[in-house]
Amino acid sequence: MESTESGGAVQADARTERGERILDAACELLLAWGYRRVTADEIARRADVGKGTVYLHWKNKDALLLAVVLRAKAADHRRQVERMRADSRNILPSRALRGSLLDFMDDPVLRALYLDDSDILGRLNDIARKELAELVEAGTETLRWQLSTLRAHGLVREDLGIDQQMYVCMSTATGFFQAEVLFPERAPARAEERADLLCHTVRTALEPPGEPDPQVTAAAAPGIITRFARLEELSRQEVRRQLRQ
Image (cartoon, rainbow, N blue to C red; front, top):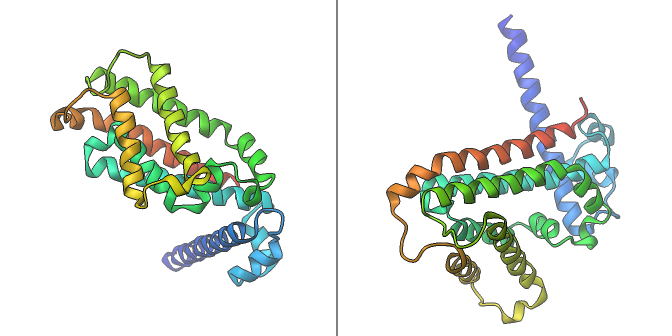
């Protein structure tokens, strides 16, 4: 019995490793060639597997490339959670968005997704909007929960309503993301400085003056971290949903 279970575990591990290798290959080709030129044959060649093996894991090309995007989203949420756990002040919108901008600059898949890069994503943009609608809505509700919790702890001002504060967060972050492409020649050379400017802008717009009380941020952090961890898990569930069952 143990031998059978052990053999099953080895097979599962091998399948997982092979699936990750296929995802890595698909990601490399998507970024290098764009959606239109990427084929299952080329992905299989890059991953050093047979074409049939690709379809043992994924329903079709669109499901595989969508999983590439979802994996990047899940990793983004994981990094956010790790920052919050390391320092509870990172639950503040200014610091959370600072981290998001650094992640955006460091991950070309996130850049393509957030900038609707049609050269890379092609019609995958439309597929992602349809398939990820619930995930996007979960992200919006997580932001609302985050701001509501911070307001209750006095960590965000209340001179604006939550909907207005959400708009400030989303539009300001989008502006900084777009600026990376629209006028990079005007941006400070260091990525950290650009992220600090976003942090300063959001902090000035939404947060009380002065440094937050560490005890207060520590008290507010667990619920917010749980919500962001849930986003990571939802993204990973969506990756699994694209697998051939």
